[in-house]
Amino acid sequence: MKIYNTLTNKKEEFIPVEHGKVRMYVCGPTVYNYFHIGNARPLIFFDVVKKFFEYIGNEVTLVRNITDIDDKLINRSIEEKIPVVKIAEKYTKAFFDDCNALEINPADYHPRATEYINDMINLIKELEEKKFAYEVNGDVYFSVSNSVGYGKLSGKKLEDLQVGARIEANKQKKHPADFTLWKKAKPGEPKWASPWGEGRPGWHTECVVMSRKLLGDTFDIHGGGIDLVFPHHENEIAQAEASNNQKLANYWMHNGYLNIEGEKMSKSLNNFFTTRDVLKKYDAEAIRFFFLSKHYRSPIDFNENIIIESSQAVKNFYNTIKNADYLNIKDNGSEYTEVHLLHKNNFVTAMNDDFNTAKAISVLFDISKAYNKTKDKTFIHLLIELGNILGFFLELKDKLSNDLSDISGELIELLISYRNRFKKEKNWEMADTIRTDLKKMGITLKDTPERTDWNIEK
RNA sequence: GGCGACAUCGCCAAGUGGUAAGGCAAUGGUCUGCAAAAUCAUUAUCCCCAGUUCGAAUCUGGGUGUCGCCUCCA
Image (cartoon, rainbow, N blue to C red; front, side, top):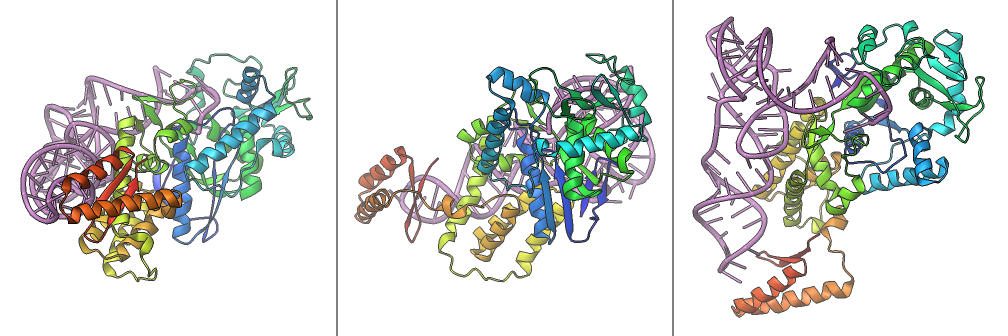
């Protein structure tokens, strides 16, 4: 298994700290708003990473934190005129609801920043003792000048950073790149007692504390969007290594952006669609297909046409599964033979190469085609088994059965039986009328040699 | 100013030295009363120029274009 490591800018062979176990930490949301469709990318991708590691026999521990204290929440609280705690509650719930709608598995831990304040204070104290941090008027900063190797993740040099025009020069800082570890509370802001007075921790500290606490000093994979490389992840590394001189994580994985009309989609640019809005129009699996049909590190462009194309592609998989009359397949124990294993192997090989999901999907199409040619239902089992890794076909029973009350379902069956009588009498006009009228109601009929299938369009 | 990414068929996209996967769409055929589905067939020499090589989409140099990071952001 090879993984592209941002730390070394190379694909490297993945070797976990502990054989058979994978510990990973992915930066989660700051809960001040509904998350947008670009935020869905790392959620979906790392969900797949976890599923694949498990598929090949690892025990995976995934941590996805919730940042529930931050300037953004405070601003939002002023805007919405409700307390910060309520804001956090509201959008944390929304986060879980939306993840659920996207069929993303919950992580093993969802630590909230406010539950780890004491540990953060302890880390900051430790950094202060080791001369990596200094206090000015109740604010505490990390001193990047004292940090060895600062910039190694992002490839930036401190000298070059100075050139960048800082919007707000903070004269309290010894070096412009020094970042906040502890921020003094203004009147009315949420606050916690600390050796430096009342205030709140900085964002970069929370991930270090929570990841170490839950995963140990050095864990396997730290992930997130590429925009977190600098400064967030760089600063995490600086703090962790300053404190215990150990690597925070061995592999750093970053997904590319989602663009909208060629520009990065972000909350700051205000050019975003929320995931829940997109989900109102398109299926979760179509969204998944859209993301996974491109390599995770490449930028991806979002527009409706592409989601529509993705929906069609997903629908075609479902056609294959329906054609196989999946729900009525009796034997689940069909053994894979050489032909099946060849496809399975192609899939695993693609995923082993830095999670080449685009190629993996093409293997799913190969399998679908193989079924349609041979009608060998073992291919359907394989398609579903591998599709599940990418998060497809997880709710097959619901998706394949037409969810209607018994009576409505029976009425449709009744109409179909009348239509079949007309067909027998070669009364095509009546037969077609029934089909057209049902189509208008969103019910599509499909004649097969044995029976007539029906389907409710979304 | 510093650093970096990307450019492959109408659209999406895989492919890091050996002669262009796959998906969506389209066109034509088969099948079906007709539809739908399925199936077969057809559709690119890889932004431009120069170089390295027996051989390059893949390596090197130059150019053009697009995007990003250096400030909160997945």
